[in-house]
Length: 348
Image 1 (tube, one colour):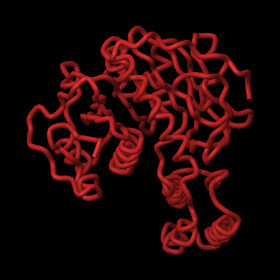
Image 2 (cartoon, rainbow, N blue to C red; image 1 turned 60 degrees about the vertical axis):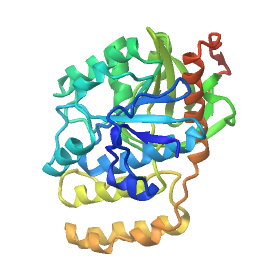
Image 3 (cartoon, rainbow, N blue to C red; image 1 turned 90 degrees about the vertical axis):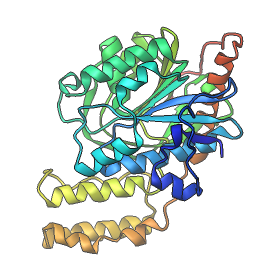
């Protein structure tokens, strides 16, 4: 197996899936020049903490091929946690202060659910920005997912995110807008899941020197990059790491929040995700909630019926992009000739 978790601290879900026996070496994270060493900073709320681990582990494992990929797990302090979340982090994750002395080639940082309209008011903001500044100097490349991408551009370039009238929720078609090593061997378009209430806009990004890799007339920017000091920062507004059922789980969670009166409106169904039969069943369920309000009706939610037909239509594109990213890191570590800049293909 190409993916190795630092020091034998392997989360139980991944250990069970791979029948993996944790290594006992205290310095398992040191690796040869042919390996890629990644600090994985998982800030997702407790409800998605372990699912997010599995999604990124599986994606990186698939992308690695024969390349050894070593992960060390971190999480930002200040993210609200339950007792179970705290126990999980204390068992498998390192403290963020250990990152400063870690020998890593790259960082992958997830987002989390925002609690404040202004990200600068989040309790974890000071540590998050310290990590971003550190990564500019100490990594070959840094991947930022969803809210982490928004935080990065706000911190380094003052680019504010804009609230959307409804949640950008579903699987959307994006067109490649430039040629770059990260998009090598990809098709001219791809489909990636998105789940967000805010966006950063293309005009603001390009005016600050970012290169947009893919966009959509209807769904905005998907991914964009910028070299910041020594590191190539790769930003995803979406979630190429998602599994086939992740959007279904989020939709179910949002319905429960509506039934608990934690949101005012019934959530919109994810776009481009369910087939016609599943869509019809979910519309029927929505009608039932109008006549029988209350969380107890969730016992009738047709999760099994609609979930069995779901397919991960974005996996090959996600694996290809992350494979390109790992190759980029290896080439920079090997002192390869500077990779050529992106070449524009025009806007979608």
